[in-house]
Image 1 (cartoon, one colour):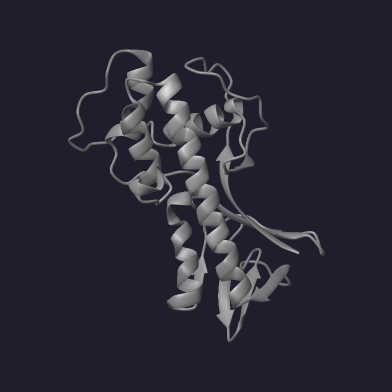
Image 2 (cartoon, rainbow, N blue to C red):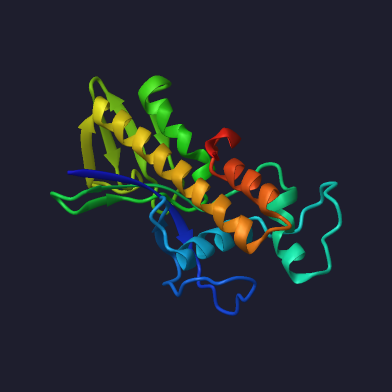
Length: 209
């Protein structure tokens, strides 16, 4: 069985106190869906905001002085948002797992459609360097294209298309859950946080009901 999930790379939330978050192992991957509990959801939103909590030389408005406004500043003012992670593919029969590489982001998940309907291949970061290639009616997923004899996963094109549609639904369900969470925990920023999360996940704003 092939399992495909949108995942967010998680760092330790040590010292974070702006809202409830879950304890987690650093540099693990959190699957995003509508099934997350409140603390896991808080962790995911914290992580996406933290990915964009950086100083730049552009003409963004000044960073607010209050701790919450300061932490959310990058998320709410950066146009091209980044959410560390991507799509994780596991072959449960062999135990082989393809993970997104370094510098890959969930905002790039639609690059997988290039494998089906575009150039027929796509890569997803480095260290490892995962690669997807279409070979006729089959897609070959190479766990690390920089290694000889890298493990691979093969699946029909039709199955990958179905799995990507399911992953998009998982992301939309997560976004809806995040919108409801933001309305409760960040009432003064709920709409702008939800809109920013939609951009970070490369989803249309209409995904939120």
